[in-house]
Image 1 (cartoon, rainbow, N blue to C red):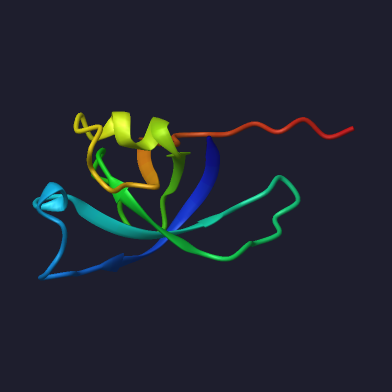
Image 2 (cartoon, rainbow, N blue to C red):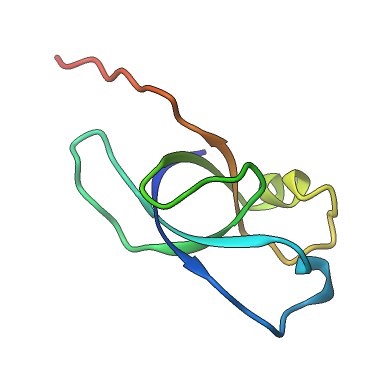
Length: 89
């Protein structure tokens, strides 16, 4: 899983039928150091909003979140983070 920030929405009127009704969000991984990486699209199964920190699963784990293992999903938002605590050394 990755810790990401939701930075946008994606709208698509034409898409694979397995994605009908699935909300697509643009997310960017956030590291403990605060560095930002390149963004990507994740299917949202928990109702996340822009600006929220979320947990994102990828690969076959993401497809399991959709309850449709045939869905063409690489990444899925599976949780909204309420708080995080990162130890400093």
